[in-house]
Length: 115
Length: 114
Image (tube, rainbow over all chains, first blue to last red; front, side, top):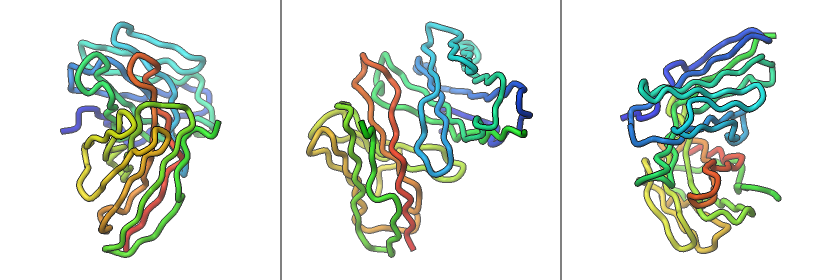
């Protein structure tokens, strides 16, 4: 049972345009969400997070939106740059309850920025 | 700070052989984790530890054992390697809840079992 889903395995975007990566979750106990970025032959690195008490969090070119009623979050990258080409993982946690020590990851979306 | 380090970076094993992967962190993190990454499967939790001397099973624990004898180290063991354990293994660590929530990952160990 995949509790965190990234339905798009890959995405290609022109440099300078907006990249939108999507993530859906099924577990209503999840209340904290993170995005990780992974380059080949490296470990994932933390990018941005959002708590369920917010619906938006922004950090430079990266913005994460959370729609709790739809159990959906998205990562917007504006403007997209070649260095953004990587695999992006969505992750979720139930920080306020059982299992708060663990993250559940999606399967990842490979983003390719076309120069 | 070196962050999270993993040893070795690459390893090739024959079916039935054993090995231990070492993870070390110098951030004084309480929690440590072992994941495996397979194509199309994302990151799946194998085992984790919420403190020195403690371990717990994750999503895919079969065929693996772990130990956390020191706070800064988390060892992952394969007693009898199988081809299905061919994967990239990542270690991660984080502070206990109440601090920041993100996990910090090591660079990975690529394991091939033939």
